[in-house]
Image 1 (cartoon, rainbow, N blue to C red):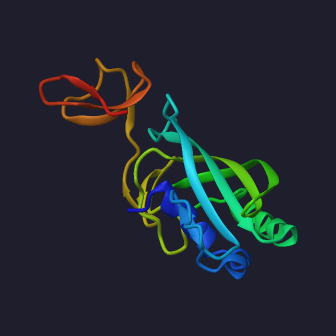
Image 2 (cartoon, rainbow, N blue to C red):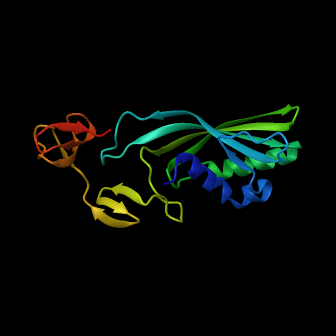
Image 3 (cartoon, rainbow, N blue to C red):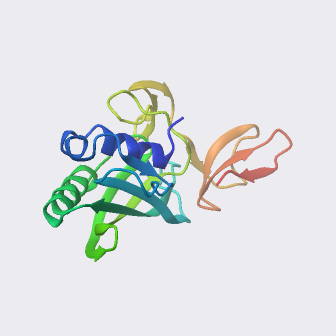
Length: 192
């Protein structure tokens, strides 16, 4: 199953402008070796926070800070790679990513060359979802039901108070504002 990091790698690796500039020199969560040819892209998710509430349809999100570092031999190449990365990721949706937003960039000259950091805020699904070849999630909840690969496979969870929920059912608890399961003995178990 695709992770957020794999979804980012897919977005960068399949973008024609990024690929033309850095080829396959895209490093998730691992700083490239000192002898790695430039330009290269390194990225990490240093901060991740689950969002406390679920959407009304029972789905949740997590918010991540994405930091993308770029190193190049000259400023013109650096600027081109930064522009390509920003263009590839700003507004991106696919895999685990619901939406990525560019939040800023900064650049500097360092001993190894020209360095830039490009920052994004990423909202992602709170559970692993297998992407389709088009990069869209295979599992999604819509107002009309639960879909897998675009096909309706189930109904949307009912909304109910804990007390009124039917035993042995999955439901959106209006008492707890969470997706929950009520077992056969009547005990309610929050799922998020």
